[in-house]
Image 1 (tube, helix red, strand yellow):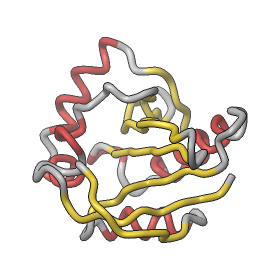
Image 2 (cartoon, one colour):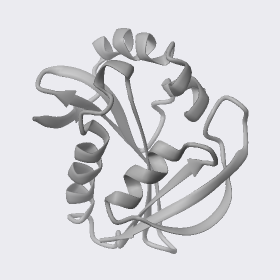
Image 3 (cartoon, helix red, strand yellow):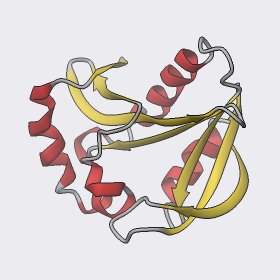
Image 4 (cartoon, one colour):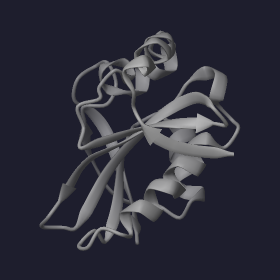
Length: 146
């Protein structure tokens, strides 16, 4: 059973361990260590932290919430990202004015593209993001209406 909770100071240890993973370094800004977003949650599988999901921003002009996530190697392919996205979607439906969720996914990150497509997100545009360790890179934006 997956749940979310706010990050705690003691989460730094497992986040640092997860950030050593080449996949997290490749696909996330600051190797998964960026926690300066509007709100960031730990993804828990039972009591074990397995990932992070963040609300980066809410664009008041478009009413779109921008999310990002990553899952540690020990939590992958168990439904953590899917469950976390669903839980945050439920939270965001309670915020007046938020009408959609957007995710910027770096070109080449086929597992993330497949996941969000399976959850009802639609490809809406191409652009760039500061995902990954290479700075600004080519990305695609997926959106889901709430």
